[in-house]
Image (cartoon, rainbow, N blue to C red; front, side, top):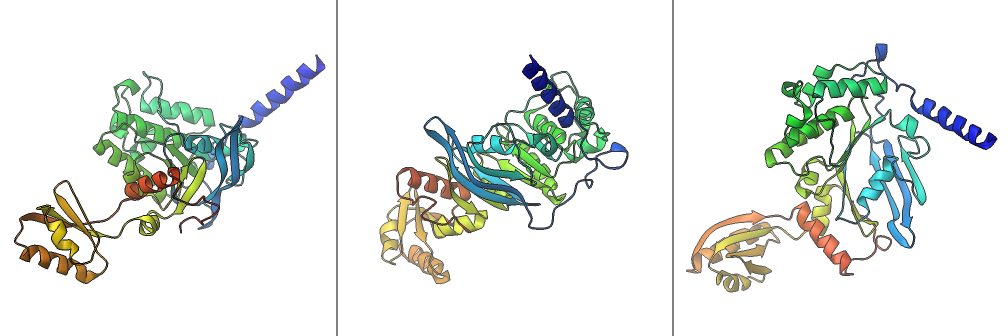
Length: 353
């Protein structure tokens, strides 16, 4: 009986500690500048030799990476790669099996009560009470944090001011995600974890969310983004990491990764497939598919030589354009090569720049 009483007392004390109001601005008001920005380049997320096992299955296998203050960092990977497990460990939802994790210097598992006052989280498939309005939702979250928040100002920042009085169940998909961002900002967080914030949205709504994410970065916040849209990661991220089969296979700036693992720039000519044979006489790599021919460019003069050959070939052609690999092209190539055993393990090759 004494053990039960003592255990109950400890749980009450821990709950009371976690319920203490977060640091706020003057008179308990949260503002976009109330949080402490770390020094430029300071590491606000540090993951070292992280492991998560389920019996004999290693869902996360010796993962290490860091995120600097004020940057947008995208964490990418195919389904079942260990991405969601890693993110849940960072957010304090799931306990790790090994390694260390520090978010703003805090352990997300043992110090979650302190950490949740300094981070904002939008979970995947965000949902809310159907008959509450965005204004009511912001005020509710503010009360949970013990803060006074200007709901109108916060909704305007995420481009939702015109829907402040609309019920949640009448909002579009993009507007619902914007409300999720607004709620994640109620406590004026230093780090925002955005878990697939644009999944299922139409292109216009996706780009609207992109602008909100760019605004978060411009305010000096760190954004940790997970997404299946590789174009989104390429457009928004300062750096990315790709995880597959539980391990980081590459990490770095998107352009640097594309330059390292992508194919050379190509000139694409839409026209007669017989152009491929004529262009192979130039000694440059040539591929042909779907009514177009692509020729790799190894120097500036190659383009002129290719066009001159096409022009004098006597064969029909319609148009030409230059082609560069995207992050999606590189992602598919890297993940496919690793699964085929053609890429070295991360321990055998250093990550990208």
